[in-house]
Length: 309
Image (cartoon, rainbow, N blue to C red; front, side, top):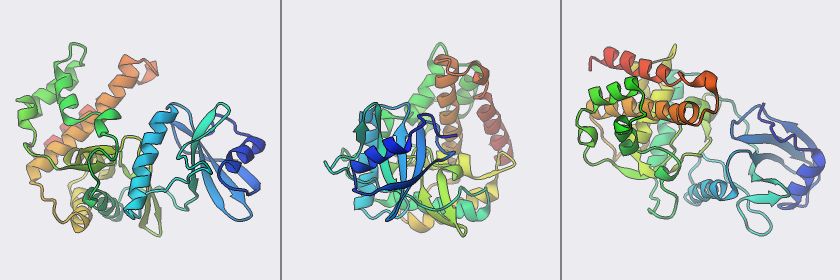
């Protein structure tokens, strides 16, 4: 369950009062989220999604909301828009709680399919097409790993040998083996199909911009391809085609070679592996998950074999 704080109806009313003068008629916990507790709030007038942050500080949450607010200003149709409090703040603070209030949006996470990949590709392509000035949002490197971080980790003395071997195999010259001039702009950083909402097989929203910011859009594309174009847990070439058809439909100025796409997918899988290593091997958050990064290493080998690279 995404209900780590056990928020009462009385407390949810006090939080809603920071925004609107409406009575909470019903509150229910939602089984969503890892780093947040999520609640459905129903009033006579409206339906809201209330988030309580569990593992980020208020400044970190605010930086994410600045990004979402900027997307709203640019009329991006696939992101949730946070409400501002009566004091015009993007993040509420109430007693020991802080978080965000959104309008509630109906929808469900889809399963992997050609239609799912096409729709997610369109959403990411449109996001990458937005003209967001650098400096108006946080850098992706503030909350995630960029290509240089991932590739250079292979030289860290604590890097697992199998991770190092993959980097040396596919990026033998380090960053020189990566694309010379990557496009930069707004990125999501964690866009897999289960970070979306669909209705009637159409994309309704991209969720969880926790790793979003200004960054490398080719890497962002690879991350999304590696976590969306899946059939029985394996990256499927036909699903990649469906994804890219949607992506190029919205991002008409982008053009990548097959080699660049393949590198981005491998780097996307390495980014997830490094995320798991950092949390489970270094920080020891869950000792039962220390080998979980190996699943991504296996996916890289299977993908490379499938593509003949």
